[in-house]
Image (cartoon, rainbow, N blue to C red):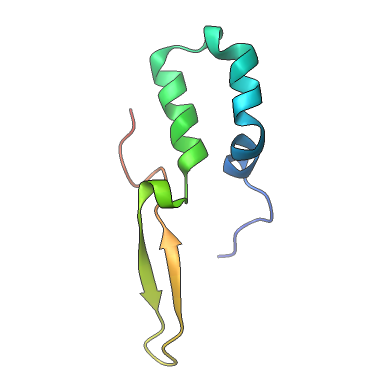
Length: 72
């Protein structure tokens, strides 16, 4: 499965702070927590692991998804 060129998390990382500056007062704690988790999705902030191909030895870092941990 390939990743789409742009994901919601990408948009939140690029414009999320601007959005929060304007609308933070309408967020409750759980909504803000979910928003932050989505911003950190598949980044070093959530940790990651090294994937390696057993045939050719190619290695790539895969960052953890925000869905791997419970943020609610």
